Length: 151
Image (cartoon, rainbow, N blue to C red; front, side, top):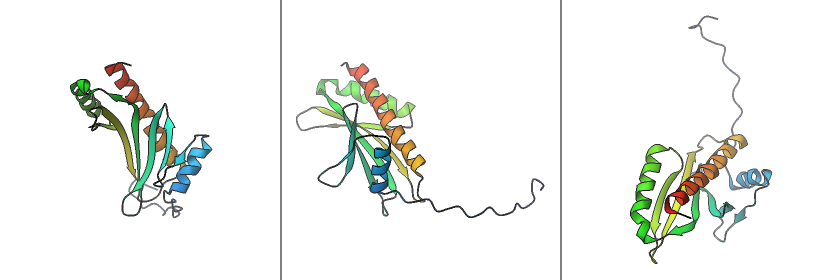
C-alpha cells in the first residue's frame, strides 16, 4: 500500500477496564506493598515514612489522584526558603506538583500530588507506572527538600 492509500481497518481494540479501588488494591498487593483503607474509605500506604493516598475523583471516578504528605514538618522560620524551593521545583519539573500548608500551630506541612485522567480506562501496567511515578517523584522531592532545609 502507498503512503496515502487507505489502510485496512484495524480490529477493534478490546475495552480498557475502568480504574477502581479494587484494581488499585490488587496492583499494590501484586508488588508486595502494604496498603490500608482508612475510616473514610480512602486507600493509602506508607513509603519512606510518608503517607500516600490513592483517590478516585471526577464525575465517574475516572481520575486517579495520588497525594502524599511528607512525614516531617518545617518550622515557620523556614517559610520563605520552602516557598522558593517549591517555586523552583514546580517550575523545573512536571511531576509531582508540590505545595505547602501552614498549620494552626505554625508548622508547615508539605504535600506532593500526581493526577491522571483515565476517562477511557487503563491497563494494570499503566496504573502501576503512574503509582511508581507518584511514589518515586514524591520521595525524590522530599529527599531534595530535606537537603534544602536540613535533616
